[in-house]
Length: 254
Image (cartoon, rainbow, N blue to C red; front, top):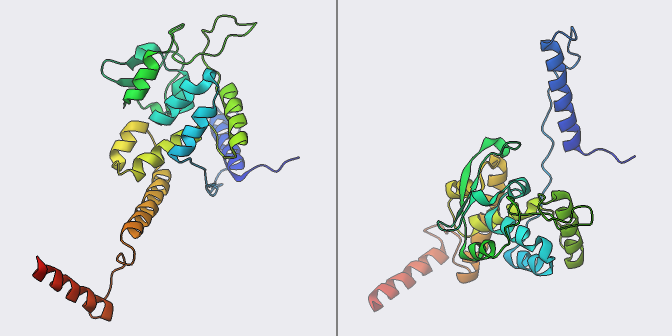
């Protein structure tokens, strides 16, 4: 039997504690055997993210049945559940936005409602898609369901993505589109509050992780264009004095 991962154990213990607390409130049990038990957060497992070139490789290898869905995930940072429950009433191509909002049997994670701006390419993609049902992304027709009006299956979409990733040799899953979008936004200088507006609730520790990635890329970029000139030097060091003399010569030349 495979050993459960720390996160799985943590989540299961939390659910058990909630169940016991419910039983106490309903007077189904007298004592809570887990009272006082502190559940520590498991260590975060490093998650993959893709460069934009890698995203384009994935999209190029994707079947037409799922390419529009994967393109939407990659270009908006939405969760797969948000894309699955998106209707054409949520799409406003005139104003180039889409709305993430609750439905009768579904509520966005953390209850957040938000507006997502759409790129020109994404607007063109959506405008060319057939509207065969209320859902934007529908499952392919089958013998059992010959009319392609059902919501897309995230399980089948993930299975297809896994096949593509194995061929390309990349790690990841559907949520990696979201992580990659956040990473691309931050590394391209989009302020964190704007990124949060785009993608909705994001754990602070996750944002810190992406910000660290952005800092690393920024450091690499400046080291590339200004090699040897990026470290602060003491004002009395020989190198600092040489730099000052060079600056004075440059000022005189101006």
